[in-house]
Amino acid sequence: MTRERWQDFVGLVKDKFTVVAEGRESFDDRPGTREFIEFQGPLGHVRCELQVHPRIVGKRAIGGHRVGSGSKVQYEYSPDEETATLKVFKRVGDRWEPIDASLFS
Image (cartoon, rainbow, N blue to C red; front, side, top):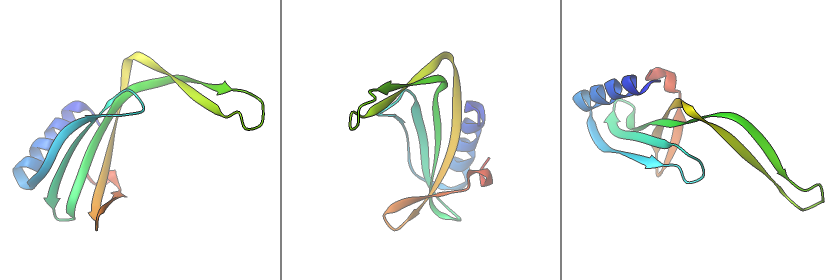
């Protein structure tokens, strides 16, 4: 999903449903942002997220060969390319359960 389609989708949601929350968050462990909108729809309380982050162009494993020394993966990100992913969740009780995002795109 592109940013333009996301903006169209958010406008459509605001026109048709009751918006509960909306905003933008940064990821804690990697570069990128998460834009979200929560609304009351026919499926109940739904949260849609557009996750935008730089494209991963490579990765390296860093660590020792000794037992118990642990290892770490270091990612290399593209400076000019980014990817966007739509994720959709439905509130069930007090937790969010993922649902198929193809229903919304």
